[in-house]
Image (tube, rainbow, N blue to C red):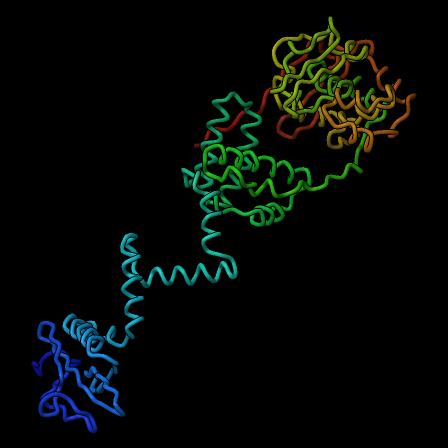
Length: 459
């Protein structure tokens, strides 16, 4: 053997005879196995009638020896050692025969996947830790069932852009699309990664961190549900699995703070109001329509001949058609008005209404007109089911939060409020900059239009 070769090759010429062993001729190796320039000797010895064979070689200055019961097994081992020596794979020679077989089989199995053995073992160990006592095969089967149908891996900002474009194309109202955009943009900023990785606990922590009211939190959760539902329809989420927002419950909203106007307060503000503010005040107070619904309402939906207001599904908050009767006093308030186009042509009118209330030293509680209508309406007709149909709410909410807030006598006064003499000559001076109203009753005969403040041009 070449002494300048691999340091693991045995230099048998310099190896003395093994004590108490009988080898080949002259006590040397009984066989030698060669592979390329590498040669591995095999020695034989007999003890107590049994013959043993030894494969000997050197590594890192140490002499190593393996024992076998028959010559064929020794030759096989010597052949492997010689091959490793020739290939420079010295560390593999430390493996036992069955370990080498396992190594070779593992490499063979991974060959079709083109995955290195070390990477496969690392992946298995990590998966085993995560699975704990669960079967990896069972977990992989379940994963395939839920996630195999997925065809897209998409981020939240990308989905938000797609959803808004789809809703616009489907004809959704500007108000609804605007609400989605406002809330989902904040959501996308908080979760810029893939929607598939968002959990219910992640979403719950985000909602709680916003520190908004219970009603606002429920509204935001509803918008996020729309996004996740869209993602599922686009094969970005598993079809058979609950989405993160579906696993969360709405926050309980208390209605203990329901505030209503007295008939005297409502009469004061209506009798001071100019003609262009009457639609908001009268329809809100005597039909109970939500302010957002009034903004979407056209005069064509108000049929005075049939005595009804029709809210189409696209206009109502609950996305279902609703019919509200026109009371006698509501007819008296809106019949003299010019009824063309939008009921509320400019949203600034809502600010003018609250400014008018302030000028009369009156507070304007949230949803006060709607709360007042429901309270007086149930006191008058004594039917939570009918009021629920008219108001677009559930009978249980009507019965629980609005019953017995007012009396039937007060209800008669409320639905008995009609225009005063000279009502349509009322005029106000509204400052759009300070959002304040100055009363000028009796001056002017026409309803003036409200204009938003002009924006200054940047220099």
